[in-house]
Length: 140
Length: 408
Image (cartoon, rainbow over the protein chains, first blue to last red):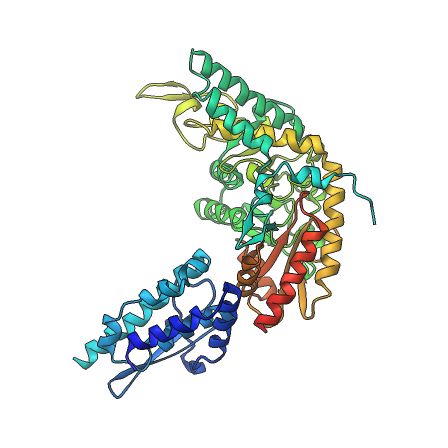
């Protein structure tokens, strides 16, 4: 599935809930089902800067696609990174670089996060795209 | 349990913000250790200043300037009386506690040298650590830590052992922001003075709950922030004994702190102006005076008794939640409860509570060494003020149970 389609799927899922408590609950469930990063990759280098809680992300190229795994010590943060991993994992680096992130605004996620967490969200997106740039450079 | 002498419902009407909703829920504000809310009496003082006599102070010949000067100095007098300072010039307006601590730490640069020692308690927030580390780097004086036990009480026998003729300064908070511990500052001051050390007590967390008498304490420096005691942000006070303030060099240059300036030499103004460079926070100072008037009208004894009642009630209710651990269980503590629920990150709890309209603090509370001591990344902190109610504690507990059910 293309990034755009997955993003639309996520927007549709979130729009099914009436209030933000339900959306938080859903996000927590997503966090629990996140493909976890292997312990050996939970290093200082893989911690995303700008998050108040700890978030580790690891990227690996499988064939020509980039696969992300992640973890966090806070479950809501884990839910946020789970949404991003779902939207961007198993995609070609170039597609990740070119993908827009309007779906985050469409869910209303940023406005419902504390400023700290909203900054963390921006840092997470930036980090996923940086991985994509790095791997795209390798492919070239 | 003691019956309260405060009419809380009447008091709550003084605070317009307590009527608002957050995320569609009635606000339950339990982040008072970070900043307290402002009563309309203080808001009115701010509106009155800007509506009627906004002018720069001390040097204007016109009527507005005179009125503003009078009110500003009146506020200084109110603060002097409140803390029972001997003289008004011992009350220095600052931008807050951090500024006041930096003023003293900077001033001591020329009084310290290698071999001297500075003692600081293990439960300080960063504002009472970093300026001392900088002072230590500038002078070569050694910074030593007064340790605490697992309950969050200072180990006074170890304090005794650390004190020596080399001790020149002791910095300690009156009440810990992260744990709520009320420190035995009378003993700390008395013992420090025996070895000839000066003492700064950071009263930022204490001043909203207890009335400190600086003469009775015989403290050399005492610092407070207005915004933690129903006043505005951006203003606070350094109390200093006149002798010390005369000895310390000015912290910043310009404005009211000069006596005479030539390109060859500048002479400094007397106290308190020597330490009040530039245009001060005039409105803030005046509003701080109004805040103290407001709190004194309620009465600090009644405030302390009521807040103790809330603390006991909240502690008992919170401990009914499975796997909840309170950090800071000192025998003598104030209305701050720092806690975690096992296996749940404090940020997650704070986020869910926020969605329910409940404002608590989460994180390290600018006291990372305290979190390191307990080996936690942070805690959830509920801190109470005299306008909080037991019903609000119940809302917190209910919200917390919901959050725990969602997050575990």
